[in-house]
Image (cartoon, rainbow, N blue to C red; front, side):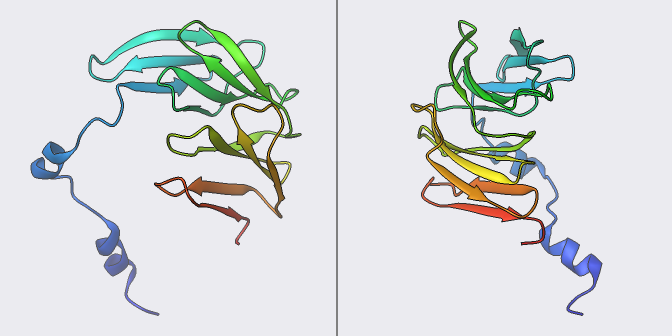
Length: 165
């Protein structure tokens, strides 16, 4: 065995010092959350206020993430009968696209930075590659377990993992 548990933890832990906190910057002016009450909330980070609450009682809400537009989100359902993803403008509360392709709960959403592409993964053991401008998925990968995936910082490469692989 290489190194003890505490040695490994020391290598990955970081104490938040005053200097580190002062070096951090706000990455976005907005924060978006979902709640068990089937709502999506948009917050202004700098003012620390909730700007808008949007309810999704019919579909429910689970995962949510911003697109390249600061008040447009993609979110997954939590109702158990419609596994579509939805592209929603929080500004005017209008849906501009539905992404249909999964047949079980969506457990992963990963957007490509500053592009119109994203990846979704589902308990149906599929990972789908999407272009926000198209209704049908652009790629399909079947996996042997619960998927996880993410783009790199530049949005050039994505990785997919599933099960213990």
